[in-house]
Length: 544
Image (cartoon, rainbow, N blue to C red):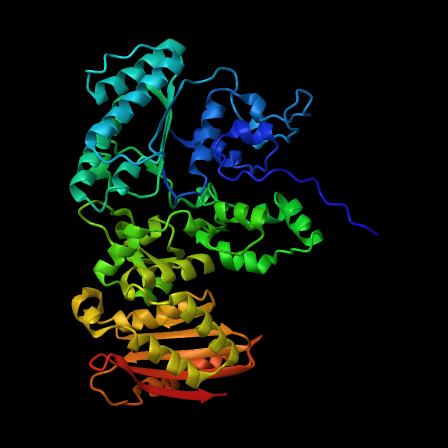
């Protein structure tokens, strides 16, 4: 008997307005219970999330609620030609009696590269808001803080209700110019002048939410605005952006069923490995952009990563001599994650805020909270490590795609000796002149980073064991029924010492993988590298 395909909707790829989604017949994951909680619990909020995680749609949803557009939240039968839709939570949990004037500011579009451009952009948005709300502003010659102050005051007076201020990508003009610190500082100063107005207008404001990617220190950009409630790591709002497991299995169930019936089934565990893993609370979430592109194209690939190769991030990590195996496990205090500024950028904060690391756990140590960070999923691990290799860890012209395909085949075949030859060719392909001229190659952890990142770029199941020492990299790769337990050690001198294998045996990382589900063979691999020879000098293999 033929199975009936459930009712399907359109996938809201790139759509950031609630009206388009609700009236256009698109899927919508109802986040309005959390919107109601926000509105009921306070007034001034700040939220940091990576790019393309639904922040703009969240702000538009909040704006529609405060503007009193109840029809977008109620159930609808489609009689007027718009798409039928189910009732959202907020329809019965909101004060719809009288709307509030909403002021929207956005820095999401385009790239501003001069302070003058920033000020022109702000003036234009203030004037657009004034026209929309039917209020007069002081003339353009007036400075921005005075015009913004007047906009809030007059909006509240004209509409006889407190105003709402929503700011999208509050930090983008700064982030876009981090490679030019003087410009970034000028942008920061211009934005600080704008945001400083908000606290003084407390009596005229009902609700304020600023969203962005980074958590710039309050001193640097929110000077005076010390009443913002930062909900970035508030467990109650951990799923405010992103899709949960339940969302995938309920809201998008028709897409999974359709893919199955059309002969292109999408394995749920594979979806989880590729795109889940982001965590800002007890419940992990999927990258929504990845999920939508996967359901549309039915291909597992780095959809999110490909929309914005982090050139600055790659170059900055290279300049810092970042030890790439640490992507699997880093430790950071809450203060460190919250301290981000033009003059002080910490690797942990930058990688976490931009979505290339996520929180894996936390513990109290005295008065401090310490977070464990890790790569969230297979997409980020493989794509970021490939970008790092191509972005300066290896010389330009290195045939990385060919090398990666060859590496995959060797691991699949379990050919340990051919694997040695493969890595020897990789290191031999790095010209001596390039090594002498490139600062990254002088870094203690460089050769271990190349070893790890080449393996990690495959997107296989990698388990880090010990990654804190730049001269050493312990990891486990599970693939094709085998567990490769590897110790990579940079040694003094040119002769093998056997220390790598001795440490493997002493630590006995292999024990927990013997007899594990899906593992038919364990291969212990002790690798010793000589920086003077710039080559592998020790390669011991134990199979069992």
